[in-house]
Image 1 (cartoon, rainbow, N blue to C red):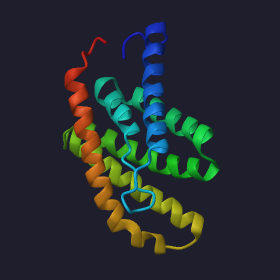
Image 2 (cartoon, one colour):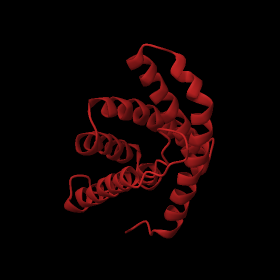
Image 3 (cartoon, one colour):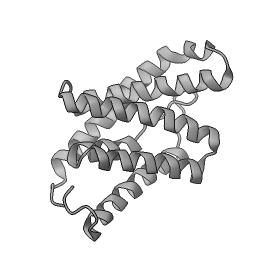
Length: 167
């Protein structure tokens, strides 16, 4: 993003962060029951993915990390922060790497990021609980991550096409 340090740059980053927080909060408030505890659509990731494709990795990483921290502070606790950091960092790294090597499009990058997010959170759960039995939940999370990740990728792709670059 051009003009780093400028008021316009700061305003754009702030808007992206606010949108990501708002999407996460709406999802938190209106959590829909799909019959599987802990499964969320991950709509806040649309903003992170948008920033990764529209701006650059540093902007997307900053939005992602600030969103995770502020969400945990506002709506969660230390455990949710740990889960969020584990999932968010691995998902971001995978999405950044896949975009960089241009192996998949936005939808594929999003789906694989969501799957990695879920697997990292399972790893965090195994670490906190001291048992590997939490990985029996992996098949459900693999399917949910793929489906919801593809959905968020499609929504992001739509936004990338519809929102002018100079906005």
